[in-house]
Image (cartoon, rainbow, N blue to C red; front, side):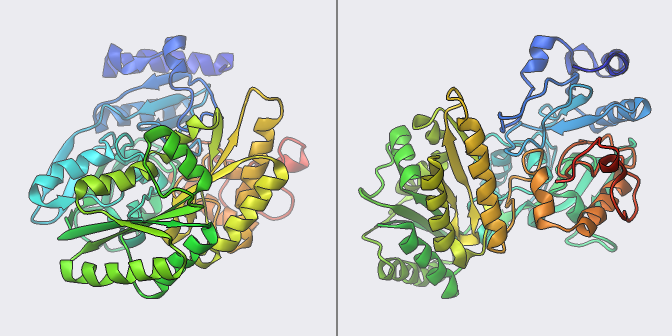
Length: 492
């Protein structure tokens, strides 16, 4: 709960925002506020002090200026599907929800561009471009419900980012409201702009540099053909070997996805996807492009799968069968709820060639700890999504699941990977940042952040571990941090 001073500031802001944005744009009722207490990472909750739902850039600007004037922290949130707690609100702050900013402002086919507001659902961009023969490439698993603004904040990926890249590769320009309330453009409609790539800096900054209010995205022409196969293997070792062989042969599929036995079990229980019986792992491989190229590469993919132990290969004959193949994979995260009351979705990256070894290490970790781990992930670019299963009602299971989840991230780092591939750091993994980066690295990142937000009120408490506070004075730090020395903070 906010302290008396913060409560007074929030009360003043509520009155100001109702006058400027209208009664229906401001939520202060405690019950209604509670519905915004977390994003997709439900393990962390905090009831926001105030929720505001602006509909225009000018309204976002008014909200940010109000917060800046009173020094009230604020957090931007789209659909709330993030999985690292990046949109976790603050009890002493304002949650700025952009779900009412959902206009597709322009579909510019001659220039293969679209201009959209942050609350637009990812899949809606493709639906708007599809009648013209175009689509928007980044496709997170939550594509049907996640917002483009959230995709920008997290630099989201998806199954087809192996070939087409992440959100940052498809954003040309951003209109943002800076933490001091100015409206500026970073980049624009042209493929490149002179000077520093500030739009590139903003994408993936997890809402710590400002609030995006318009986004210029790149549209791609729909491929001539798409072909998809499902291959069943006895083990993840075999499936991992096939992935390395396919990529090593110079074939770049649109997607290579892997599920292990536990993930398959969950999908079967949920959507009855009828994957190969007895499979210890399945691969879904999809190729797209000119028909002649796809035909030649598809034969090569099938050969590598069989040479690495695939005991069953199914090829989709049409779009209906293609959707059937994808059904199990697309529903995998939610399906895990059928075999476990609670689970953590982890997100780490490893070099692709390390897949077999890391999956064996995860299996050993699971056996040693007694915590089940299901693996469903983007195998082509080594982006793991271990699902760590537990039952919150059993004392100690939640804590053991967190320990296993952290140990998996340590495995990723040890193998030369990263603690996140597409879900962001948020609050969930801030304490792991010093395991990947030196103090000098983190100081440099903090300098960038403070250049945008010197007051430290824009989504504070995310990405950077304590005591690298958002309001910390920019500059190279030497020696023991004063907050650590005073016993007020802990250096992870």
